[in-house]
Amino acid sequence: MGGVSAPLRPMIPRAALFAVPLTILVTLYGCAASGPSLVGKWAGQVEVSGSKIPADIEIKADNTMTMEIEMQGVRLQMISDYTIKGDKITMKVTDMKVVKLPKGQEAQKDLIEAQLSKAKGEETTNAFKFEGEDKVTLISTGSPVTWTRVK
Image 1 (spheres, rainbow, N blue to C red):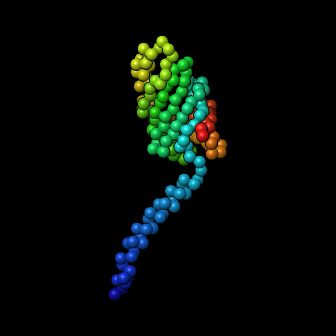
Image 2 (cartoon, one colour):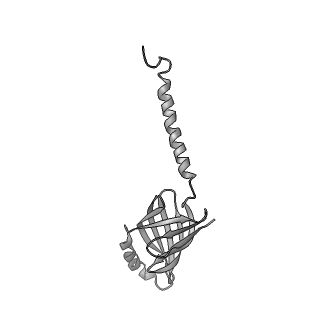
Image 3 (cartoon, rainbow, N blue to C red):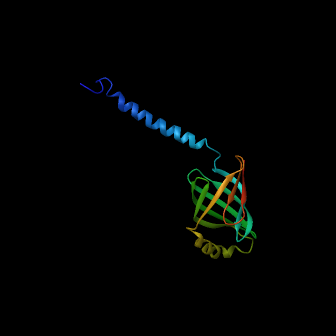
């Protein structure tokens, strides 16, 4: 009777089941240990029409991110889904809204948000490079911008 003896047969599937999760765990650990993560809160800049604007950014582990910028007293919030492949991050806008308007301009909120809604679905891809664990530079078609982790 060739093959595996009767007492060992039940052990082979159990051993195989143990090996698969262990391999996955080692692989995930290897990926996580390969470098710093973009997940977290950042302060930096974004480029808008050729100008660098201060921005507050939060990148979440669930592949969503929130970015807030303020221009001329108007504070805007952009919510995006993101994916990371290698050294590139692609952001797809899912929502944009007005967070703050200067006094006397509150009546324009609906008009501004209607204009902002046109950005929904837009995608941008940027290369990124860490300069240590708490500083990252993003490079797109314009000049590079730097983000610093908020602790």
